[in-house]
Amino acid sequence: MMQEGKILFYNEQNGTGIIITPDKQKIDFDINSWEDFENMPSLGLDVTLHYKNNQVSEIHTKKKEPEVFEISKEIQLTPIKEEKKQQEYKTFRYKDQELHNTDNEVASLLSDANESLKTVHENISLTSNISNTMQKYFGNIYNQIKKREGYKKVDGRLDYILAKRFLWTTFNNLQDIDQNVITLRIQAIANDLLFMSTLEDDFQRKIRYPSLTFEEIFLSSQTEYKNIKLFTTKTAQKLAFLREKEKTISAQKKAMKKEIMQTQDLDKLKELQRKEKVLNGTYVDTVHIMASLQEEHMFNAKRLKKFEEQYKEDFNKEFKAKAKKYENFIIDILNAQAFLLDSLLWKEAKVSKPIQTHLKGLSVDIEFNTKEYLKYFLNTLDATKSGESTKELFKLYEHLKEIQKDYIIIVSASAQDAIEYQLALKEFEKEFKIKSFTDELSALRWAIKNNVKLIILEENLTLTNAKKFLEAYHNSILSKPRIILLGNQTNIHSNNFSIDKILSSTIAPQTLYKATKDLLYDT
Image 1: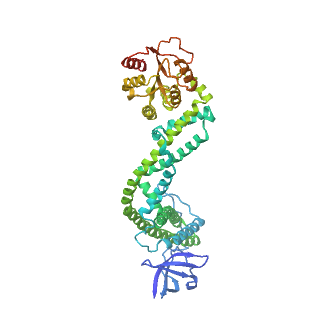
Image 2: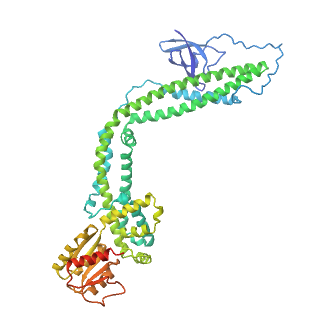
Image 3: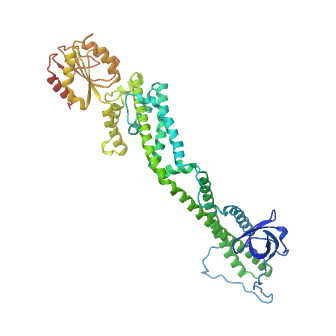
């Protein structure tokens, strides 16, 4: 059966090529079927062929009406003068090598396009369902939480998200003053906190951006989807290249057309006409490939979008439900880690001579804890220039006041007196915690771990007296609480501490309450 067609691709190295018919059928051929020895196969060449039982034979160049472009030798050609305002187009000088490169580039893209233009099914197959992809992601989160169940036993929580910036600033500052303050245990907790913080950051990012979560967890597990996605990206790159190439060939055609119109030499004219013919064929092939690739690109884009819309809503709904549960677990671990790190860090700081010296050298007395350290830092800031970061620090300070409340401790030889005094001071519990002792050694051990703002102390205790207790307190604890002495001694003052108020040992509880209020809230 005789058919017509155009050479879509030809490889001079192995003599094989492809002919495309008017009905878009692609027919493979090789040089052995070529019968026209005056013209060799080339891109864009119109041909006729015999095609039967999927076999090609007798390929000929299609005969065309001769182009009317003859110039009589007798006619004297006058050079064409350039007008000042010529037709607007870029001046473009083509070269033989440029034509050759264009030919090869388009042929290469044509070869790639052959694979892409195969008919494919419309629906993308599912590699892993929603439940499996969800289990894979949350399975890792669950394992990390399971490894850290021990943090549930930590007796305290510090809001890590709020304290994060200042906590690490404190960590680095104390380490700069004394490297030995970072023990192996503190370093291990710090490293684990950083790991969980990174995990939480990624987790929050996925919660905030559902589309990103869907892509990273679900779509990344779909093999066929990923392959088509990659293919569409490459197709888009090819299309971009071809669009630029089409512009280049158009410019070459204009430049060649101009030179043909101006050429007076017949031999040169024939050569230019031959090159123009090749260039026109390359241009047609380029446009054809672009159309084919664009069609394929749009088809695959629709397939990808259909697949995404099919699963996105159900995935996001299930992810949101599971995320809330695991988010609470992660935050609780972070808060426990932050509390433990902060507590151990200041415990080491209290016995560090370089840190003691540094803090004592500051203009104000600072208790050895994050709250007091932050308070000092905030006092150094210019309130008129407070930005969002400073507001966050003030918010952190309020949080620390809640979880790290200062204590009022009562040390008395009489359990009855201690109870009555504690009841009288109950109103202060909104801001302070109140603790009473009848055993001064227990009071000292307890005070080492907590921040004492006020000591109410009887003159005579169970094992010792007030002066010896305060000397021991000063040697064991670096903070300087305010002191109310219940007794009659007047010579108890020391260079290490001072008594703020001396009241009678038989004072009424309500009178003690008023004296405490005046002392704590004096200006």
